[in-house]
Each structure stands twice: as structure tokens, then as C-alpha cells.
Length: 269
Length: 269
Image (tube, rainbow over all chains, first blue to last red):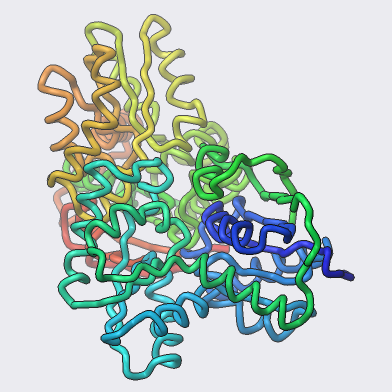
């Protein structure tokens, strides 16, 4: 479990959505290597009990730690809600979630203190966005809206046609009417639908893709702890999955924005 | 584990979709009582391994048998694919799946021997429709099409608006072009979208809702084994679930077509 500045960043998610976070890490920290674990055999985490999500998150973290990561990013909203506090306390490496950076970014972007959050039912019902928003900005008003069709639309690759546009209008017009000026995309799949979301919400609303503030926070954290890799190299990305799912390559590449090259199936108990 | 003609029919599914089968059993066999088990804590079965689906199906069957059912209906396409053969061999009561009756009904409805099947990716990839169609009607041609958006559309209750209509057109027009005259709705959620499906396919295509031939086959089987209840009674419906899910009542009632009255949460290991 030893690591150096050359060691990779570990990232895990229940599925492939977390590759949107990897995409931003590779853009913002191009010299850092990444080891991604997609626990596809047990997706979705969102419908599981808290104790089960915690148990699975700990197994994912242990798998990555054993392979010598120097920092861990929990790229899954459900795991971030439930397992972040404990993993941050117990792991020997810095740990980031995706919810806190998104909320911090929204709080610094808003001017009228009216913030929207779109996410899965599971994430909204977990109350974690509400809790962290309340803590970081007690004066703000929050408006939450689950958008269940966005996940299958993203997975089908139906990102900008009439169906995506109409679903976006149906979900987002009620939240737009609340005069929010900032909207958090609280699900790793939603950035793929940023085009239609932005058309419906209009230019005056800032969209917060949690992947970007998470990668920026990771960059700051590594710098502060003197753990950044400052050399020049072709930084590798290794992807481990606990199972293969249908349309794996197509969906994974859409999220990642590059070719899936080094993918390995692994068993974690 | 003893039963009489008065005993209930046992029905299980990983979710609430199986209530579309219960709805037809209550319509076609109004004097029969039904005990439904929704294994919501472990949904969806479709993404699980075969051994895990088999294990869960056996636990569901055991739970229902202990409560004295006189027949078992597997109202889940994934469990029907994987666990039907073994349950039928090992259980002391008659067992029905939802795939065989749907295929038999399609084979007797078709005139041009061109049959379509729409279902989830998991069901289509399991190959069970193809295998049973091939066995029952080796001369027929089959055209399969996964329609992943139909499940969230049904769960959102977006059954007949522009979004449902456009999704139906996008999925179904390619299969309509194959000149099929019969279309199996191979997922328990799809009958809710029968309106838009039928508009896209046109009147000349017979839609096979597996719930109806399954209930008819159950009726014939009970009669043949002299296990039908011939009295007159207000037949009860008891629903057991291993977890509650969001929008439980709204979704359940949409599938069942009546009020959810007697629901109990149970634990099965």
C-alpha cells in the first residue's frame, strides 16, 4: 500500500458514469495516471441500503489502495452521500467526493442564492445535496428535481434530438420558473445532456458539472500536499470493471471522450 | 407447505412490473386469491449473473411455497429465462413462466411467420425468446429490439405524450419495416405503453401482452388438475415486498389497475 508522486489517482463508481470525472482529471491533470474501478457487477448503488453501499465502497477503496494509489476520488453520488465521511477518516490517502466540490462551485457561482439540483431519485432522497448546501450556504434556497429519463437517454446516446429536448423541457421548465441562476448536474450521466439542458435553462443559468470542480479540487489538494507529478509523460489510464455490461465500449467512450484501451475484468469479493 | 383449491396463486417478480400479470389473473380468474412477492431489495434481476438470478428465484419460490400457494407464476422475464426449467422440475406445485405462453400466443397469431419481440437488453441477450421461438416455430423469422427507454417512461407515467410517441417511433419503425404481423411485448412494463406502440405499429400487427396468455394458460392448467376454485368469493390479493421503492404506490397501482391495499414488507434472506 505504498505510494509516491508517480502513483496513480484511484477513482471508483458503481458504473461507467464516473468516467466523466476521469475525463476532467485527464484534462486538468494531464500528467497524472488514473486507475478506475467500475463496480458494474453491483450497479446501481442508488437502490441499495446505506450499509450495503458503505460495504461496497470500502471494498472498492481497498482494491484501489492495494494497487498503490496516492489519492481516491469517489465518482459516484450514492457512494459520496453515504461512504465519504468514513473513507476520508480511515484511509491513508486523501479522499474526495463529487458532491462537496459541486456544491462549493455552485455557491461561488450563484448571485441570487437560488440554486437548482438535478439528480437521480436516490441521490435526492438521500438528502446529501440539501445537507451540504444548507451547511455551505444557509441563506440559499434550493430546488431539487429528479430526472430519471436522463440516464437511459445518455446511455442510448440520444443526446440532442427531439426526445432529449422534450424530456429536458418537461423536467426543467418547473425548476426554471423558480428563477434559479445556478444548476448542479448531480449525476455523472447528466453532463452528456448539457446541450439540451443549457438550451432549456438559457444562458443566464450556470451549469455545474461536478466533474470539473472535483478535478480542480484534486489538483489543489495534490499541490498542497506536494504529491503532484510534475514531470512530462504519457499518463496511462487503466480501467478495471467487476463485470461487463451491454454497450460497454460505446457508453464508456462517450463518457470518457477517448478510446477505451486498457480494460481488465477483476473480482472483488 | 400444504395447499387446497382455496389456496392462493403465488406470483413473483424482481419489481412491480409483475403486477401487470396479476391484473390479468384477477380479470381472467376472478375467484382465485393471489399472493405476490416483489423482490424490490434486489431489483433489477436483468443485470445479475445467471447463478444469482437462480438463487434469488429459488428464495422467492420458497417464500411463497411456505405460505401454501397452489401454483407459481414467474412474472419476471429474467427469472423466466434462467430459473423456470429448474423450478418446474423441483417444486411440488405447477409452475408457469411468462415467456412460453407469450411465444405460443404469437405463434398462433402470426399469419406471415414474421414475429417481433421487444424487451430489455438483458432479456434479449439471454437468448430465451429466440430459443423458445425457434423450438415452437422453426419456420418463423424473428426480429428483436431492445427498448430501454420504455421502462422509465412507464415508471414516470409518461404513457401517451409526445416523448413516449417519439421514443416508440424511434424504436419500432425499424422493426415495423421488417413486415412483422405479430409483436411480443417481452417486458412486464411495456403493456402500459400499448397505446403508443399500437399507434406506431398499426392495426394490422397483433400485440402480444404476455400477461394475458399467461393468465389463460394458468386457468387451463388449474382446470386440468382440478385445482380451480369454483366458489364465489371476494378474492384477496396480498402483496409482499422485500423493500419499498420510490413512487411505489403510484407505479404499483398503474400496473395493477386497482388500489394497492394489503402490502407488507418482508425479509427473505
